[in-house]
Structures are given as structure tokens and as C-alpha cells.
Image 1 (cartoon, rainbow, N blue to C red):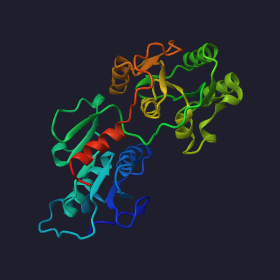
Image 2: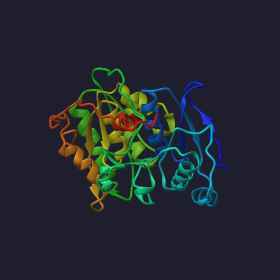
Image 3: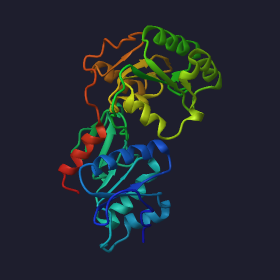
Length: 307
């Protein structure tokens, strides 16, 4: 018998069930919850979470014969992260419920009812694949504060050379060129030396990652008119767009052509983001254009009649 979903986080007693298989990684859970919550804004559902099964248990459910049909079962099962794949398929078979994977799966895409795959992974065109602009997220536009802006600083990554001097120079030029009510936030990857330099440069406008909670970023992006993000932090680019911000990218040198940079380059080609030193973001051809991939994918799922 597979495990029952552990945590009910929304919905009424009569709601249809959405089960999220979570590997515990915040980024993956953010994607799954973004999709589930977008569905919940359209119909009455109960969203629950559970960890992946052990590999042996999942394989037994995938290949056992004569599995029973359950009266209490999920209506939809979703998950992101390679560790969730076998569990998604096991629960799909046991409960006869559609399974949605939010990434390029390590298994064949044909095993899943729907695959939501970022365009930078260059997925095949198939009826059960929806190409997304970046990873889904939970952001929602808020009431924008006139003259507000936020700068989000990342850190070293395998895709980009972290040039602290270049980043600080761009931040200094931005603050001088655009006299907004700026807040500057760092991330868990930001080196201590960069944080110290940002504190000296921006004073009380700098908020280190250690002083922020899980609600800080959604609140700031929801209220900010403009957001600048270092090039290594692609997920924050998509989150800022989803929150309704005008978005600029602080540039870094790429270590090699990579899928992360391809996704952001495509956004630039579409006029959705600009880059330094376009401090006034004049190059945006469609500033403020609605951008919400979770909402679009939720609509596509509902059109399939699964809920």
C-alpha cells in the first residue's frame, strides 16, 4: 500500500485531491506548489505533500499485477526532481490518476501524462509535453509602489564566472542612474566579501540573505516596479517577471554556452528583459506584459478534464 499524502494545506472536505511528491528541495517544491496553487485559484482542490517512496516500493507498485482501485485517491499527482519520478509513476498506476512532471524527466516522457519542460531544455514536440518559459513558481503580482525597485544578487555557479568587482560596479552605476527606492538582497550563494561591499555601498538599503525569511522575496517582488538580477540567478528572473516587474540583468561572463543563459537570452530576444547598462530599461519592447507560466499550465490541465 502506498503512503497517504501527509500534509493538507488547502481546500475543503469535498475538494478534489492534488498530491505533490516533494524531494524536500525548496526550488522543486516551489515549482510544484506554483502549479497546484494556480489550479486552486480556478477550482476547489485540496493540496497535499508527501516524500518519495523508496525505490524498491515504487518499483513493486509500478510492476505489480491486479492492483485495486481505491475509493480515496488523488485526482492529480505532480512533482519535480529526479527523485520523484518513480513515485509519480507508482502512484499513477496504483490510483489510476494522471501524473504531471515539472521538468525534463530522467525516464521517458511517454511514461507521464504531462511533462512541463522549460524551453531551454529543448524538449521534443509531443502531445503530452508543454514547453514553458523557465521553471514555474508561486509569485503573484502585488500592488506596485511607485518608484520602487529591488536588486537581487546571486553568487558563484558552475555556469558563470563570479566577478565581484564587475557586479559592484554595475550596482553602483544603477543606483547613480536610477534614483529609486532601492532594496538590495543577497542569496545563500553570495560571498561574504560581496555582502560586505554591498553593505558599504548601499547602507541600510542592503538586506543580507541571513536576515530575510521565506516571505521576503515574494513581498518585495510583488511591490517592486523594477527588478535587477545577476545573470547567474535565472530562477529569480522568471520570478520577477511573474510578479509583474520590469526586469534587467546584471551581466557576468559565461563559462560556456549553457541552457540557463539560453533561456534568459530568449527572454531578451522577446523584449521581456533587458541588460546592463540599459538602466532605464528602454530596450523593453513589452514592459509590464503579463507573464505567468503556472497560470497558463493550470489552464491547460483543466482543459484536459482531469479536475
